[in-house]
Length: 106
Image (tube, rainbow, N blue to C red; front, side, top):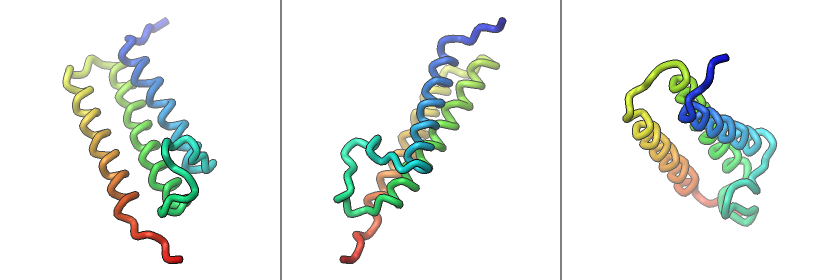
């Protein structure tokens, strides 16, 4: 039986957790998983579900793929830094998309 390196297991586990969280937020509406979000926010819940769920799904799948690459090959040591920068940019995009939305007219 092939044993996976511990780094690959970490990437795979985190990728699975993020993908499941993204699916629960996007498809099941579990916005209570988002820290600090409540129904009184100026951004509608459907927008938060869509934007946040998509972001978590993208990041989770990407991290899972990195775990697969780690388990099959010996990637360069800077791969973790590149993935971290990509995740930071994706989170910045998420925050921009949620904060740039104009408030709903009452």
